[in-house]
Image (tube, rainbow, N blue to C red; front, side):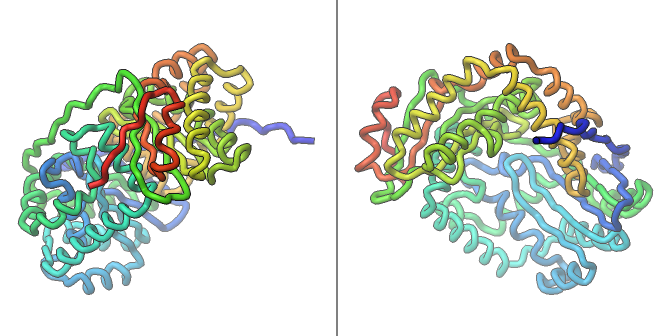
Length: 445
């Protein structure tokens, strides 16, 4: 006998403190005394969106080269000093920010932060490290061109955003742009775009507000603010009708399928409802698309859909990789199930989604890393401190009628871009049967 479900676990929103440093940095913190550990994120707004469209990849290269040594430490000396503290410091580029993340023991928080400050304010711009970063980026791009899943993702972005939008490019750039980037381009990006005025810091762990602010004083006094101008792009409208685009990989034994369009931003009031709506369609292992394509048909190891989270309108994406001979049927299933989903779901399905999302929510905020991520959302999107509770209330109050209305608004298979990467000789012609006209062949460059 299946045991009765227990009481819904409650997300206990911890006490959050906030401060603004004199140079403009916003600091968000949660003191968590469970373990002697601290997680810290330093997030600089801009990222890839501040790349020049004629030279994509500079932001990514900056994030790759900057932590490789400092003015007074070789890369080896810096790495050794970080390891002696038992800490880790990583820097990564994102579509809308560049992030520096650190994990450290509480007792070494100040020393770790000091090294972060040194990386940030005393760049080495090591020419050998620049050449290696350039080589790594070029090789990664070449490798991605041999992976059908990467080809599909990149072509989907190009088609969704269009040629005049920086987000239509791989964040690492292109083979052509990588070869053109110089270390002076990195220095110019650094000088123009990295400023405390566009920086937020999130700290979660066994460290007090007073200790954090004291440790941040050198960054506060030494890092001078400057104005940063962000590139602005007008997102293209959703397509009036669906179109299939086909990228040929002769002899491929599988097809990678992407479908979607530019939907909405994370801070749109509809986002939580749209995310709720997608859960049953493709947002979980038990979702409709995964159950049909994986469990029933055996076409794939997995199929999913999601709304990407960004400050600007971001895509709704459905994706899967299937056996080559299942391409047409998979496309028909994706289209057909989205059409059915627009007709609404049952009360039982509605309650199932609520139970899954609310009962698992508390697990999302157990670790220091998860708490720092909560602070990241508060800082990036301007959410209230209890936004997690508010979003739970939205989920709890969803109705069948509201689910249907959201599905009709945001899940329309007749106004999407479809990208198929596979063997054109055997698969492209038959995709005309889907009902979106003749597939358009895409020549890879």
